[in-house]
Length: 207
Image (cartoon, rainbow, N blue to C red; front, side, top):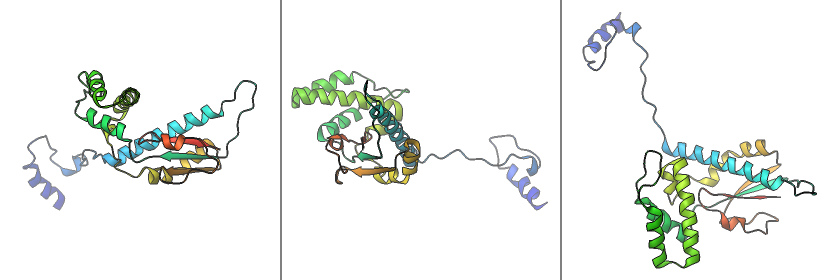
């Protein structure tokens, strides 16, 4: 009876919708979902890295014609927290362009970027910048404008380390490790994959 009495007073304050006479007939209160953008970004990042990891593993497992498929026991995922200076310049340039409802850049951004970079960079760097810009544009389509961030809102190495069971289970390898570019190179790795790692674009080494 007390609850119904209180509800009688509260009904008079609710002006934006119809209410039931009895509180027992009212639907349970709900609130709009509150999205934690950092958690959402971290979850999307793990999903992306795991997808790339599986794709890369399948690619290196494919045997050449007439040769046995290679067998791997461990994997190293190299991550980087910082973009090279050239990529940082491109990201800052793209930040000034608005995106439409489908996350496509608006305006003649490719031409304007090409002209801007040609004034201050060599031809080989211009080609790299344009390739990177196109890649970023695709990432913005998939993940929104936070793909333009030059710094991560979370620690890539820690996030991936916490989800290592996912990588182990899906690949069947004995060991998967996460290394930053500041860490030592994995044992037996004589390639240049570690140097190729950039934010959102990890590199993989299998042995």
